[in-house]
Image 1 (cartoon, rainbow, N blue to C red):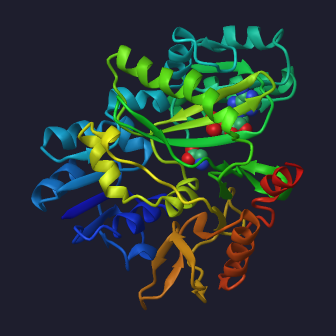
Image 2: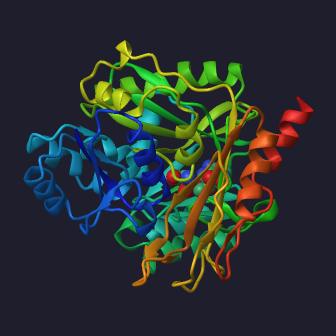
Image 3: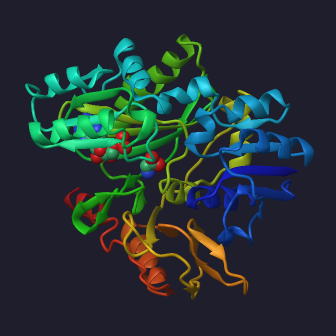
Length: 424
Ligand code: AMP
Ligand code: GLY
């Protein structure tokens, strides 16, 4: 069986390694993939947003199953095009991917169907948005409507910051057309939990919960990044919270999307905040999270491709999906300077520890065939163990045996989760 995975980061590498475990799989292609995946997939130089190129490649190469991982091609309709070309795929249609592609759509969906989320207002005029923030309670949260590489959210501490946020998003268009509209919402507090769920539009199966670490520096300081590390499971996601999420958030979201004629099939990502008033949705993503996937999939015991194909064929209810009881920790190794300016082309040397997995993101091959850095987030180093403490220790021990010039990583991935576990 020939499988194609669209995307190029650590998340895609984690998906590929898991797909490879299925004995029916003979070939895996990554479009475009990266130089660090080469032992696991054949990289094809077609960009993730080249929907026509992706579809032609699938047709011409007899691809039996396609997995579209990143938000952009999903929102642009890659799954619609591949499906129309007769290629079975994993991922939502463009209509369903709007749950991530438009924050205004997501907020209106939650309001209409009574799904708990922060109170909000939508503006398509900068003038009205500015007038509103002058009397809004602070802090407040200003979000660009469209996709913005995970950076379209500004938390404003006071009116001045809120005005500056509105101006930069709506007038200066720092996120381009994604800033034609803004959502301004209530500031919520509480621990954050990521829950990825398989759904075929009928059945929803949550995966093991996880915790992202979005800020660049230890102690949740510094700029927001794509994610500097993750742990799973998330201790703040108790059985009680899970039950409440299923009843008030997960199943109502699946039903709401069906009622809107936008049935969601694929991986639906719930970014949650466990507030004093119960769990609320901070954001939906229409895809696997990065780097959540790098801790969630290593804990999946069931064959991933079997689950994915059941989602595509709308028979997820028939497949028991199991996760191991242990914990996993992923530490992201980034280029010095990320998420700001950084240099690339630094040689990467690795002394691999048994039992650890190294997922490649910003990696390319130098002309001499050696691996070198090519992006901000370079590697995701994952270990799993019976306890979170052991998993974190093993991941950091592996990290210390990886080297490239300027490498930087957070030293406290898992610390907050461990403190919560100790408190009980
Ligand atoms: P997002 O890019 O939507 O994941 O948002 C980035 C981060 O901003 C989230 O992970 C939260 O930490 C924070 N955030 C977003 N919305 C809110 C909110 N309403 N209240 C408090 N923090 C928020
Ligand atoms: N880690 C957050 C995301 O994938 O959007």
